[in-house]
Image (cartoon, rainbow, N blue to C red; front, side, top):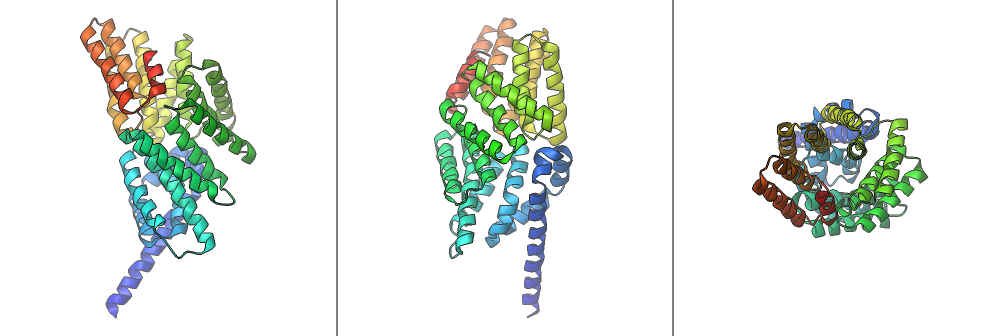
Length: 364
């Protein structure tokens, strides 16, 4: 009897622990993504053991409410830290649990389907980006988006993030699909008055058009994104727009402005431990170092960025960096090494099926 009482007490304690930390994540959504990203990231990072434990308990218990509260911010935290393989494992296991929950009422069934759809999206995105399984990842993300859309009424915030992540898979291989998805994100944000989401969507659309070198549209969407960031403040994804801003400034010969962008990107990415932003900033810094004739520094910066790419899961950056290294080797008269770097770029493009990125790499 005493053992049963102890077991019941443990369950009640874990329930309270789970409710507190999943509730904390739900409360920090806006703070993490745009209101106070650096401070909120540090606060939540200090609690990651508790957050992992709360999520694991929610999954074990099949607690749809707790998983629903925690999912978005938990995903953002893991993604921010470059934990691609962890994302695949954590959300694949949770999706299997949710998929096999039976006997729920009609309201919970809608919640179950929507949550299942949400979980399939990051699993698909990370399978595509980290493992190079683009078809499998894309199909999973499509299935996730369809599940979210079939729940009436559709949760606009969930649909926004689902379409955004699916667009990030498509952006490197299918410009038309990515454009359609991201334009849909813009429409959602305009209807809801979400200025930060609008800035993110315009920034990603700018890259969508930049990769195949549709530069007039790329510049227009970039201006829209930067104007929104200037008016409403930085968000967790601002580095995407600022990186392209730096690329265009270098193309236009405004190296001093590009250097300021790089410094701000590196400062902000350090504050919030955004490793994807660090990779992008290193690539821009390498390009500026090469322009200034500092080839050793440029090479070192490219190598640092490449070391991070596999961990973070950003295959779009890697071919760009290999081409930079090839150009440096050519300038130093190392022609065999230059050819080898170009070969590595081509292999990476082929492995990840990055057809649009190959255009970018060719022009690097």
